[in-house]
Image (cartoon, rainbow, N blue to C red; front, top):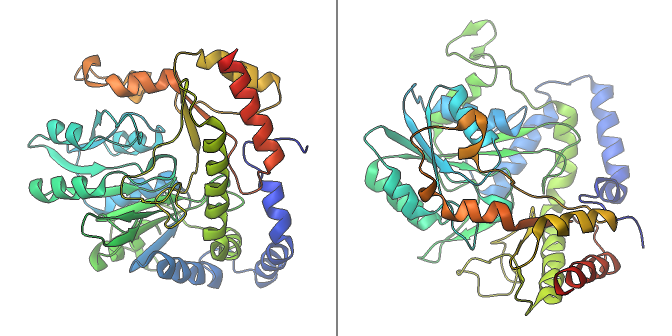
Length: 385
């Protein structure tokens, strides 16, 4: 059995090596490193894939989220509601813009932001909601969109972990993650479902005016060279990263299908074990683990370990040569940088429970049956022992 990787980027590269190598060398030969033809071509191809009017590439996913908020004209003191159980970048950019982060609890099954918690947190200062499509599955966008419409709030999708995922609305209509709210951000960090070979990100929107403003912001506030019309930043996707993404984009659905297949095998192995809770799938999905749709694209395959020692399991897996991750070990409301006397521990029962239970297993396009069998047997032997 080959060595198990948390993310096997080398194995994936081997499948597309000739295309990637040629594309990268072509960019180097052209010397069009910034805002070159490859960037514009990738932008158009991603717009078509997502069925969204505007894709604005930028330097990384954190910039993408910050720039989206800048484009909406949010002002210091405006409140932005987001999930307590997520990576810090989501709340980091809110704080950097001197907005007021409002952290709320998540749903136990999906790990995504709880719409009822959003509703309870709304005040006259609330201006936006940032649903994080965590681990590869969309938040409850029916409920979130309804709340936003009722209270005249912006919806900013954090789509860093769910590119390629779809959301089926109650009326049967389907949209890609990132094409639902007023604006969305994503990351092309190498380990993402669609990852480049460095840093990269993008902003998505169907709003023509907002897209125009964001295009200026990412380029020092310029629409015409040396004419600075808005306050901007320097955040551009370089051509080498764009050309890698162009090679990978046509494979994205295949990559996601491989992840779903691995998730099915994990689930089958753990079925019926009362100490292991496998990932929840959207109720709108009638098929087991997305055999007929893409409601979950498994950026992470995350278990909940109950009535067993999660931390001891992590140590045991590491000793057996099985990488794993705890995403996330500390709630954002308890992080030193984001502690606030406004928060009451009683408001975060689910997040406080999840941080003690979750463990993410290896999940990527190159997992094979022998590896999955070894991983699952090791876990079952431990929890049953």
